[in-house]
Length: 192
Image 1 (spheres, rainbow, N blue to C red):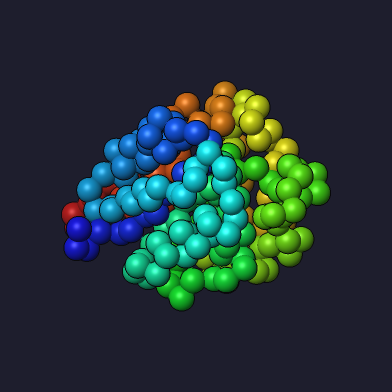
Image 2 (cartoon, rainbow, N blue to C red):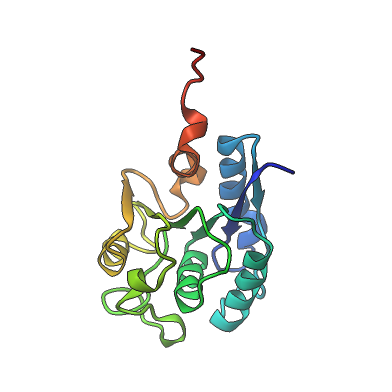
């Protein structure tokens, strides 16, 4: 789609997640953003066993094909790996935004996991000047809401969006995410 703003949605981990769970989130995002957006939904390798080396390599390949202004979105462990990969090696493309949805915080105060533990200075390592948004359901039992607070401390520039009554899948409704990604698209058109 020429002239479309690119959005890459990185799935979460687990057996069948791409086709049975996160596809609903991606569909919601596409529907809410509407025309003018190209939402890409790459399948991550060995989704039932997320591995930082494999997933970050797949994410980096996806990033190389993006235009300036593209938005990257990661759900669950896909968000954790995405933000870690961006901190480890920022893309050459100038991103429009980084969006984390129900991303577990791996490290002190979050999930254990040496393979992709997040650095203490995560915010300083991310591409400078790129807005970071952290969306988290307050009823999330997979990655409890305290994980969002850990991200807020690790990424001081992040905008934290706490969503009451929403679970790990945010009720398959990414309308708040869409309004954040494309706020200009939701303003009424006025003619002067």
